[in-house]
Length: 422
Image 1 (cartoon, rainbow, N blue to C red):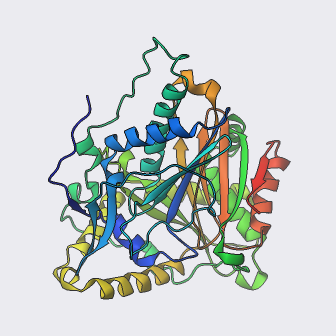
Image 2 (cartoon, rainbow, N blue to C red; image 1 turned 180 degrees about the vertical axis):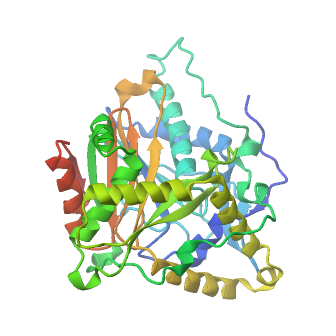
């Protein structure tokens, strides 16, 4: 039985992570997530539309539009319904328009592919995956109703609607002492340069490979897939660095799904980030980089550090002065702070993780992929069954780092199927 929408929630506050996105989005970096699923048969538009209509009843956050107040942005409930359309827009095209009350996500399709794009203020990678899994579950059971007749394939929700609407940042905020982060000492990181693509179109190079083979290669370096591929991104970047820049550290920003460390079932944003710092020495091999990155992961992924970072973020928001500063000034401050933070980051690596569907759906689904808009070259990856998909996104025409990255994998026995939108 479906839980009814709380009619009192005509508007809700943005969570802590959401506040940065309306203030810092641009035509080049639209702050849009995109998750795609490739099916083994052509998409049925009517079945997809019906599935979306049903899915949003379980994910109320997708019924909200973004509004501007005097002091803060806020979400306002909307009765608008999403309209499924054939894919016609560029990758991660803008969704938020401050002059309109439009929904903050879109669903499109082309041949055998379904795309879900979401403005980051609404949710994070985990929330996008959760919503997409629900859509695909509903779609397949509708389109292939005869094949699934009599099978117990009812949608089992991970949480109640009230839990999915939680602001988990506020829930886990405490007034404990905040420890200083050593990253503050870092003044500047190596910046990847390039010539921008025409019309600000995000350049995507997507590599699909065997999950098990990547796991096996990671084990040869005595580490996990995430640490191994983060290290490979650093290695591939150093290979392309000008000699005059090798006195600068390579810094990779890695998002952290806080649901893994704090009990939360929210479908809203609930993530943090950590900066992995590597200082080139001139004798940089992948094994050495893996050791440094592994130590950084161990030191950063502690409950103490995660608690401290969460408290720091919320304490800034709760500052009495911050509350009374008008929104236009807040936006300017956030843009300035974001630009300063960018100078400390070279790239980012995000592992959204394993996407799971009931085994009965395997004959109908080929693979998933996920990417985001980009203001710098960066990676987002996910896996489904034995297909691991790495999406290398960039605002630049140049592809040297991407070539270094995928060439290393192929030279080590991993077959990579490459596609691109250019």
